[in-house]
Length: 282
Image (cartoon, rainbow, N blue to C red; front, side, top):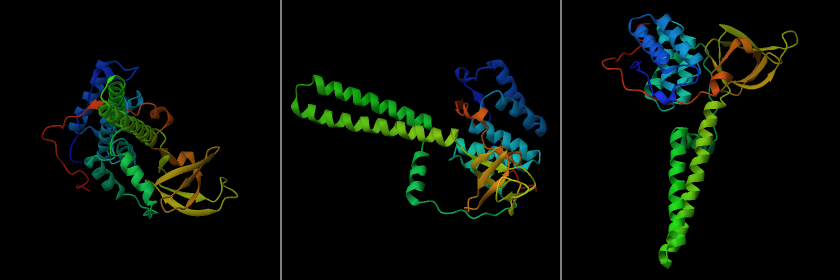
């Protein structure tokens, strides 16, 4: 971990149900507990902030750091994955995530994605959803200005130029709105999970008696939930293999209660003088 991020919440973005003073007190308490080496207590305090309905890449990053220092690698991995979804281009998050993945027993190949899909996802993730939304509003405003110029101008060349340029900005506005919606969908409709059981047999069907054991998965392996039947979940691996296991063997990267609060609305200055490569003291 290259740093401990110091979280400062903007007053008007504090979640409902937690007053500003209470939030800041908890946040300062968690940060100080981490710096004092009280990592288990820091986990509890950061988790209480998440449970209050707030979520951000920085918060999950700090929580993952505290879990790692508490020697709970699987929960550290879960929170780094959550942080990575919210901030996919953050180098510190990616670094810690890659290091935590080295502890996972299973080594599963990744099927190559269709290049157009890969290019589309990469482009949409270039900016956060709120940045795409701002771009959409700006382009829409410019298109309105250009349309007004078209209607009130008496110069034919100017009218012609502003007419087609207005349509161009309207198209850009709609496109940015689609990108914002898609980026938000990547965050709020994630169906990935992490195996939490030390080892679990993946079944051919959602039945302990009739289902055949297909293969074993170990704690920390990342899967995609494809289907549900009662308390059984059909999961798909990155190599295309699939099978069934119990919901109790998994932890979702986002629980339904968290999905509504996935809006990173905080300012994160760097914590001065804090720069360490964690996971070097194995």
